[in-house]
Image 1 (cartoon, each protein chain N blue to C red):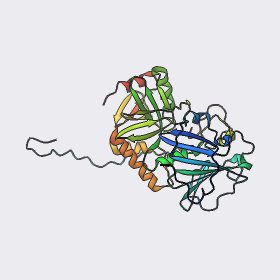
Image 2 (cartoon, rainbow over the protein chains, first blue to last red):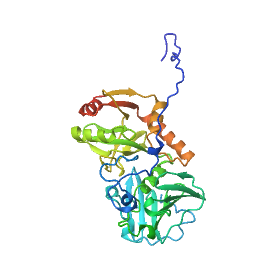
Image 3 (cartoon, rainbow over the protein chains, first blue to last red):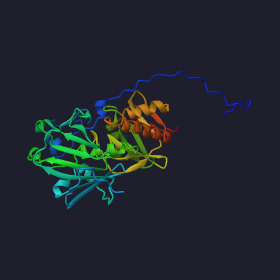
Image 4 (cartoon, chains in turn purple, red):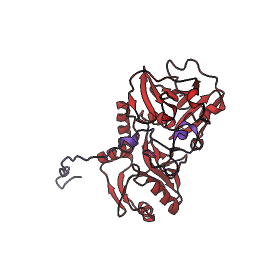
Length: 57
Length: 306
């Protein structure tokens, strides 16, 4: 944006901020239990029945 | 362009009697093996069947009597089903499960670019497990997410739906953030097409951000083949009211990255993933969406304009 003297208006200074973002590596790695309703080794090895709340589900 | 063979491991190609092909996130993956049982797809993946003469990723199925443990130091241990090794320029994923003892039940050897692979199954380990789905989770997802990590896309932890009147909406969130709840709420109030309640693939096409459904669903079990253009991204948080907060781009890149599936074994792949997210957020804005879990949240999203 230009000011009335034709110069580009300066933006107000904003001091740098550190923002902590919560990474969850246990969820970001494929392969945690993902209960799919089919046979096969992964599914058959699962001992959970009913509602699964495992990480990655 | 057809997938290149894995150097050194694909010299004796099996006769291709049977083939299955899926397309997930715009990436076609062909599975070929000597008999029909070898290319069986799970019911979730069958929805994504789509023949492609020149697949992006080609996987050959082979059987051996027994797989021995891979010798060498792993470059990445998932802490779950798979461990990754390098062998020259190849990647070698060994799949283990307590159900089979110490030896791998499956081994996936891929080219560096994840364009061709060999999936080796252990007869001994899998003898009592029928039917076999060779690409079962997480093998299929590993192939596709690593292929995308060349900089052409990213898989995110999110619920994606297509409203019949207003088009695509994406809600990202960690486990417990409300993805499946959001899917159920929208299903009740808007009858959208729900592409997934857990995992969505993002791609850019001519400067536009598109989302794709995947077979890898969440608690609510929504998974559909389809895609939709996005106009913004929402980061889900539980709240006491429905409220949108615009996120500065640097923060948004971090928040989206925290909800994606990067190839942690590859610094270059992680860097390309971050770059892709940056380009995606050049295309659309990102908002934190604090929501209350009732029909008012869907109405708030539909009524929100930047």
